[in-house]
Length: 259
Ligand code: FPP
Image (cartoon, rainbow, N blue to C red):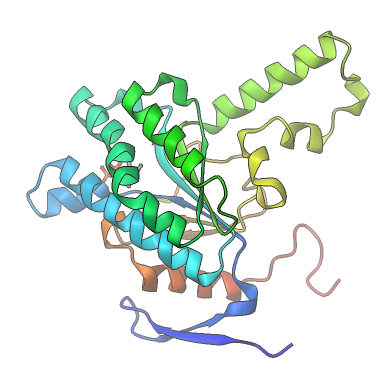
């Protein structure tokens, strides 16, 4: 097959990035970190970083969709983020309302379908409504899935899945000997992503190198990319650079390279 290569200039190392358009990762997951530090560096309140981070979400959604990514999972609010000051939590809860009130027409134009992982019943009503409306309004789109993790934590997801499986075994609907990896996959919140439930590439911005309870089961064989830019500074070129790095890796999934 003839390779379709796209060149892009990376602002970090000023080298031309080569992207093979035939090998774009199907599922990219991003831990969007560094909004607070971005704001602090500019002597702005932390929430100004979240506001700018929302603009980055818009840019990266369109960039990923144009590159042919099938699923973009974004860690927007974790089950641990409730520990932040209530004013910051309130601001973060308003962001989906603002985001979807201005961006749904663009999502539809780009054929992007919105999905959510996490317990949204604990979110303020206006936030739940904005999310449910966006899911409904984009239900007929069949391009990229924009999968927001909202009030999501991987340990909680695995705990809930375990409870459901145990309940099915207790009720005699499931035989314990039939419990396998697929049983777990089918009870996780990522089940709705179908064949693309597992991220191929996980990116974390702002220099921290940890996973912070994000898609722990699903990233078993993901390629990890930690980049120094804060999330508000991450752009289409940064995304291409991460994809170029992904394409230089040799994924073996526990096997041998030349098998
Ligand atoms: C982490 O940065 C970021 C978050 C906890 C929130 C992420 C949210 C957005 C990027 C906007 C989401 C937009 C929508 C549409 C839901 P941090 O605050 O922990 O940064 P720091 O580590 O520098 O303090």
